[in-house]
Image (cartoon, rainbow, N blue to C red):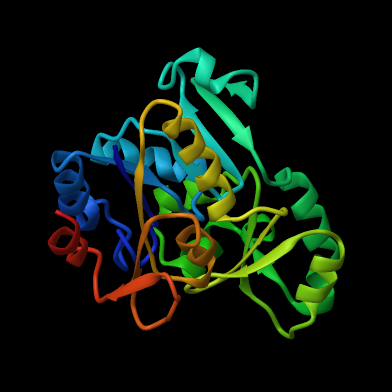
Length: 246
């Protein structure tokens, strides 16, 4: 089996966040025989939107590795076992902290550092910060395990958050606050489940420092843009992958 983890923002998605920008690459990968797994900072609600648009039925990883969502019945029951919890039509393996804990910590620091994030912003402000259309902004506000800092008046909040056990990650545009997890930790768990069925050759594509832990756990990594990672091949756009891995 060949499996590829794909980031969303600035990897599969353009500035307008339309699923059209990623449709061709996802379809081509699926037709080539790849299992496509989204692994993004985006929420479950956002990823469900893109998965429906691209007709994906595979598991997916939300909020920077905070949880693996496995559609019910996707894996045989003896492979999933007793790990994780049942939530709606998913088997969920959680790694991150509950959103309520992250939100509480940020609310305590917001005034001191001038922080703006989903939880203390209106829908209109979220649209302004992110450029998301209103409908997608609503989906992004359905946080389960993380927060995204859009604006700050001064630094120093990072150390305070880390002292309380949170991770502070620099994304391509914003700063993400999560529990003690990352994209690589969640990917390793999911790869372990797949490997119980058959050997797996793993790939990943992303564009930011929050993708680096993911690159560390796959066989082949592709980095969109000018950043550098010792295991990743730099590409100018995700479409280049098709010419490399077919």
